[in-house]
Length: 85
Image (tube, rainbow, N blue to C red; front, side, top):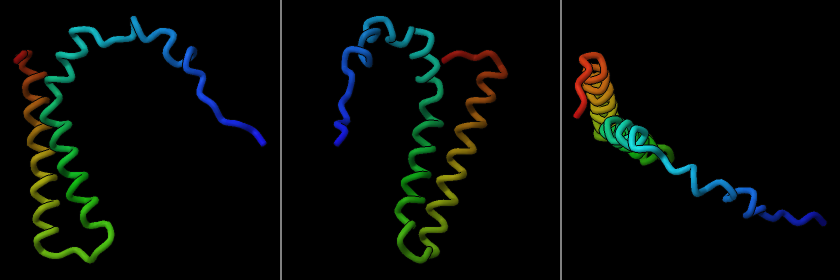
């Protein structure tokens, strides 16, 4: 029998300097509306996995998709204009 173990030292050996930089944290913050909209869309899709879609489910998914598209559009417009929040 083979034992599966983690190699904690190898996994966390460089953890002290792998922290995200301020620029990376700012980029994540800029993209947060898109991330949250994607999560909402996934939630709406997951809810409907084990049942027949109703009209309410279709509307929920459609609205979530529209929120994702709007968030991506807004992010692209901010990036294109050079605007930084």
